Image 1 (cartoon, rainbow, N blue to C red):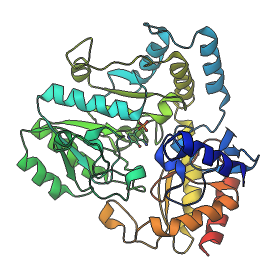
Image 2: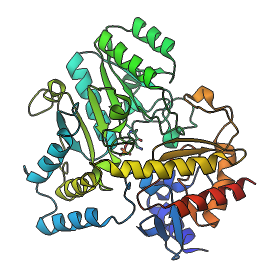
Image 3: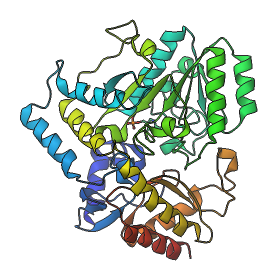
Length: 420
Ligand code: PMP
């Protein structure tokens, strides 16, 4: 029995499924999850001392690689000063000012502890601002695990049939409308039917939880225009894309101004941070400034805030995104030449879809074959060859500043071998 098998047996006895977030358990690929002891640069290290080339990168936060020195030093310095204060403090102020100075539509921001919390809070603000109840989401978009969002979501639930979870509040779910991606006519019909009742539309501007379904900017602009016309707020969920496809996320890339935006992952440098922000008129509704309640004992934790600032300081001049685009393009070129593989990519986010399919893939309907079936064996061949992908056919891959052309070449070579 390997050390990971032994640890997994023990973990299953004390935690559900042996993990603390479902996709980590390898249910989507079979076998036993590798227990990792650490990471450095582009590499993960498992309990048996084996080094693995990591393309999961903690599901997105580590855009500068594992163990980025400046982020680590900032966290250690914050620990030395005191790691939880529960008071007003200057560290969250520094991060908030850093962001609001660089992203015009984020005029005010509130830090929370996860993407889920950011989304829950933004939805509450939208309902509070409009006095309306309905929320429009999109088929295959994942927004964390708040009840209202666990319907036709992706990520660990990508293959589920409705409802996405037991234990959901049906009344809450009844307030969620679901639209297909990439379909203007469907949007028109939904807004026509529910014109005065939709509090907000929430969308991943780069849907990245059911593979990678890159939207047409015109489609997103159509959605923004409909929201404006019908008095609904537009929430862009940039938990994955924020500070990842560019400092200003997809909103900046596509030129779409959201009313509210949610962040997670990169914003905390790999520490537990989420945030929601947006136009001042809406954010001023949040307690204690306004009547929409939202709070958190550990919110704006000084260690996480300091790490997040050290991360964003290394990204703000945009050079990192240029470097990642070059590497991403190289990865796309190499993967695209492999028969039986369709590759989707934006910047440093990529999705190897193990099917021959005409790109572009923009909605669930565009996927002609089930991604899950062939993925498990390919995942394990890559793992044996020293490559770690996220253990699910529906999760995207991430490049970081620590990845090199040689790493990309290795992935392509092993992928070709695994598929051949
Ligand atoms: N929104 C999006 C777009 C996400 O991808 C995720 C998580 N992958 C979330 C929200 C939820 O974030 P968290 O897991 O930090 O709660």
